[in-house]
Length: 322
Ligand code: TXA
Ligand code: MG
Image 1 (spheres, rainbow, N blue to C red):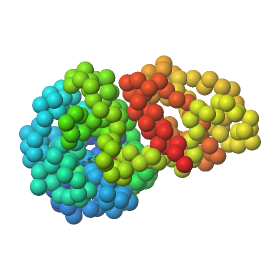
Image 2: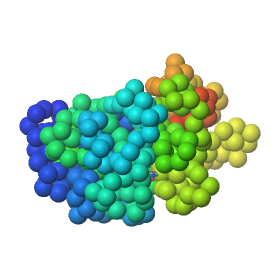
Image 3: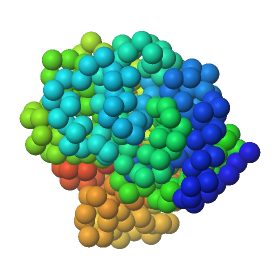
Image 4: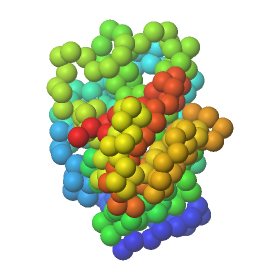
């Protein structure tokens, strides 16, 4: 059964009931829509992997609604991690810390660590509280595809496979959470996202960048090709060789204005004001609209790599990998 409901107490109660019974619910967060199940029920979690077609080596983020729930999942949180979450939760930040036994191996893909986040969307918080359990949730898209930022995006791709979709409107942030690992001596940025590096470093000082050397290369949010539409995307380099595209059906993904004139089939401007926050919020929906036109190619312009521009460029680069 599929139900898609606007915010109301009855819809959330029903969604919470489904989670308690081991079902799978798509729900809004401030970043992107998640596909959630009881994080402590391995059978329920297995259904998430099935629905998404997600390989089991890709661990999930566990969502909580209250800081106390950390102690059920994590062995220990280092002091700077605690300082950061007290300042930035609820919000688009995921921390990776050593896990407790109780967290199923399926959730963490056998890793000794677990990724935890407290989302900011009021429907997500209410759902977690009413379900009475932490909720494991990846983004609610088929594996490797662009993340959903509206309930309709979820319905279009997974509508007949989930038990219920909660509709909380378009996501405010629009790119996934920033992932920061506290499993080593110094905190390490594993994925740029909705909380900017500048904000993080203003609270806890310098962090290391990117996955550690010894890490398995297989942590998929960081697979080179990910977050990808069907249509090939080319970033910037097309500007040097425009003639090559003359006889093709081309769409443009521009940052604040269409800086070139060309008979584009369609142009998406991420933020006419040149605002990175607005651009991030529009990014995935714009890519989806372009992807729906069956174009030969999407030409994209880069954005400045500061603040949310880091997350935008990270997603664009992965989406453009062949
Ligand atoms: O904003 C978000 O983070 C959204 C919403 C729904 O909360 N979720 C999301 O989940 O983006 P997902 O599964 O699409 O991306 C989670 C990423 C994956 O790349 C996974 O490899 C990484 O988190 N991850 C999860 N647990 C980890 C761990 N223990 N160590 C390192 N990376 C981990
Ligand atoms: Mg994802």
